[in-house]
Length: 83
Length: 261
Image (cartoon, rainbow over all chains, first blue to last red; front, side, top):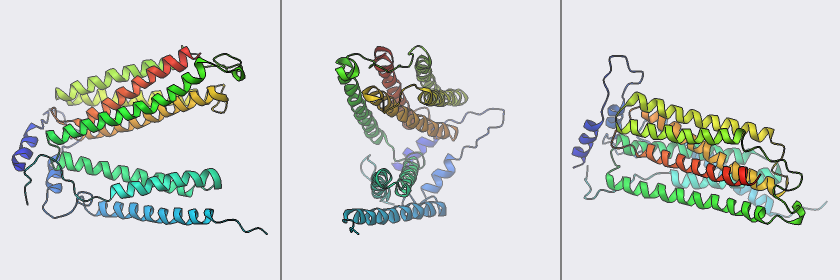
C-alpha cells in the first residue's frame, strides 16, 4: 500500500518542461531513494556523515552548556564568604 | 520491512525534543547570567543550540514528508489542527499586550497628566512610515495568496516570483520598522507609553522576522521542487502565519498608532 502511495506521489509531481535550461535540477527522486533505503538508520542520521557531525556538535554544545548552567546555578546558590 | 495497518506516522526515535528542552534551559539560564552577572556565554550557547535543534528537527520533518512519504491525508489533518491551535495561542499572547495597552490608555492616570498620549510623549505620525508599513503588509498578503494560487495551478515561475516578492516585502517592513525604532523620539523606558508601544510592536516585529524566515524556507523548498499542486502544507502553514502577522499589525496600527496618538 505504501509503495502505491509513494508512486502516486511521484507521478503527481509535475515538472514543467521548458525549452530553456532550468537553474535548479529536481533532486527529489534521488533524495526519496536515499531516505527510503532499508538501512535501519533513523531519519536524523539517514543523510550520511554530515548528519552525524551536526548531531554530535549539537549534543556536545548542549551537554557542555547544561553542565555549565548547573555549575553556575550551584555557585550562585552559595552564600558569598565575607572578608 | 513491516507495513502498518493505519495511516498515522509513527516517528523514528529522535534526539531533538530533549536537546530542544536543554537548549531552552540554556537560553533562559543564559538570560539570567547575562542580566545579573554580565556574562553572555551561556546565552550564546543557548541561542546557538536552539537554532541547531530547530534546523535539524524541521529538516527531519521535510525528510519524513517529501522524501519518505509519511504525510498521508490523516497526518496532514493533524498538522493543520496543530498549526491552527498554535496560531490561536499566539493570538491570545498578543491579546494580553493589547489588554495592557487599553488598561493604561483608556483611563490615563494623573501621573501621566490625565491624557493619552501622556504629557511629554511625542507619538509617531500614523500617516507616515506606519501607513507605508500597513500598505507593505497588505500587499504581501496579496502576493502570498498569488503564490498559493500559482502553486495549485502548477505555474512554477509565477509561484517563485510571487513568493520572492512576499519575502522581500517582509524584509522591507522589518527594515523600515528598525529605522523607526532608531529614530523614535521616545524609548521603552518612557513610562507606560514606551512600555506598551515597544513591547507590543516589538513582539510583532519578532513575529514578522519568524514569518519571513518561514516563507524563505518555503521559497527554497519551492525552488527545489518539494511542493506539488495538491500537497504543499508547509507553504499553507507559512501563509496562515503570515496572514496572522498581518492582522495583528492592523490591530496595532489602528489601536496604538492611530487611536493612541
